[in-house]
Length: 100
Image (tube, rainbow, N blue to C red; front, side, top):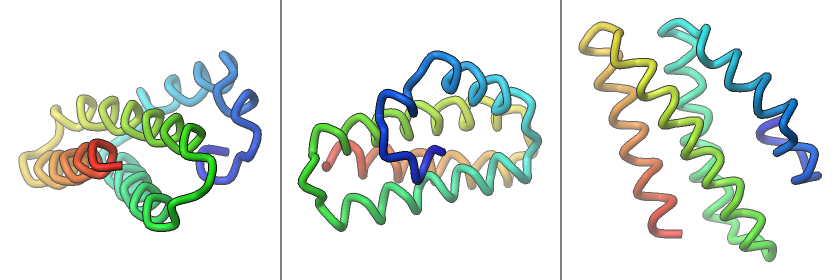
């Protein structure tokens, strides 16, 4: 849904957002690092393509950044090495979004 949904209204529906964030809160270190990596890769990929729907892309990037922030906050309880990895990916994503 997050990376392939074309319908922005469906993607940002209250039910989808609630379900997504409730799942994120339960994730352990490995899925958080994997998801954070996927979010960063997605942002890199879509910003290099420079799609015509710039406002739509800004909304998606903003949403990815919000998810990244939640994952980053959740990772603070992990061992130092894993937290540093997530922190670095989050920082890189912040830069991509700011530069877009």
